[in-house]
Image (cartoon, rainbow, N blue to C red; front, side, top):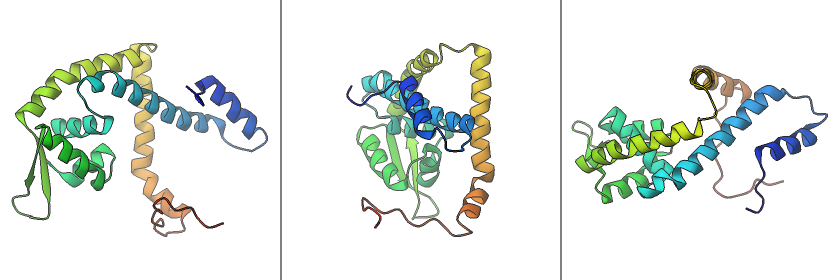
Length: 190
């Protein structure tokens, strides 16, 4: 694939580029490898087990969240899936069209929408998840059970750090200001 570099090549290029810049290399390697691992795993799972079910990664994550949490408000599903409410709207409409999820109004607040799995959605997840888990085992197969537990715990600590201290850190970095809205496709003026 043009432009594709192995993890070893990428690490060598980054080390050469950052030569004299004073940085903390170990945390940089952790964050870079979290990203690389997540991308590699996502691509593998989308191109294997999820392709057979005609699901994107995002659609699978939405199904997973609703399957595990049960009927949920869309804002909570979007939060748990790590996607915007707008993205969830499109994904949930597609899944609803396929008969996998049901969208319903909230019984006491007409502004809210609830998502739940249909019987077909439940059946799909019961069939699909064991195959998905087999691929999880495949991607982690170079690690022992102890290494899997250790890595999972280390990654959990990264998540907890951001969950518990990320807002305070962001506010400190931005001198208490809220982040500026993202520009949609426009480049900042130089």
